Length: 168
Image (cartoon, rainbow, N blue to C red; front, side, top):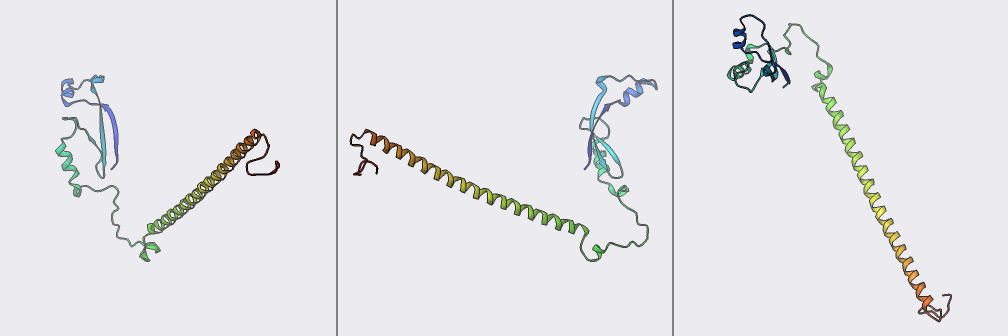
């Protein structure tokens, strides 16, 4: 339902009568804002929640509930001429169904792409974790070698524990 915000000045019927046909001076206290709703066949109808402005609420409801008396602006009148329907209508398939089928196909393709991207992302995460594990083990091995090397320096014989030769 189309609606719009409107603002302007409100001049009451009392102020018009009091002016007696002369010009009426408007001030900022006469400023007013309201909402307008578009209804087919009637145009833009002001709707104001402030009591006493424009139409009575019941009159607006009555106008909205009697659409039979109103000729819709978007409706086409029957000219009595035969019109050839498109071939797609003769086939029993609405023209929009092709568009819907194309949209469904596009959505399915997008889901497939998303799943492939997520799959590759998951594989990448597993590979990074594996690489991290290998790097961690290498670092632990280096630290252990250093620890063993510093123990050999402290041993006066220069032999590692469990070896018989200094180069082993």
